[in-house]
Image (tube, rainbow, N blue to C red; front, top):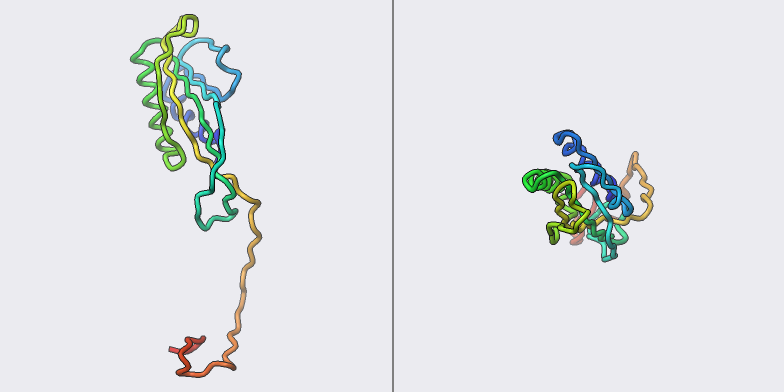
Length: 161
């Protein structure tokens, strides 16, 4: 799972529910505002940390923390709030185990809000960077060697009770 996968999973149902909604994940999309409603996912920063430990295959090498600015643009403040709530619900449903919501703010830069209202908030995602998948083997049969077993020697061997 990566950022593009999460964004598509979150925005699919939101785009279906909100008429005319467009969305994009890009570092170059900000100047391309056309008309609301629109949601932009803009990658901001990344860092690396230790992997979350579990018995997964492929094994986890690092955690890749990506910070994304999500910009929600709509015609009115009420429409922005509704769209924001839909995006946050989608984030919770699709990625609650790997994400944290950060600070948000209303954008009031002249020109950026000419055709509507704009709210921006941060989301941190912790994605697993994994090794190549380890090969696996299937054991078809097994034969136990009980020739060196001695009952009552203090060791539990195959076949003893």
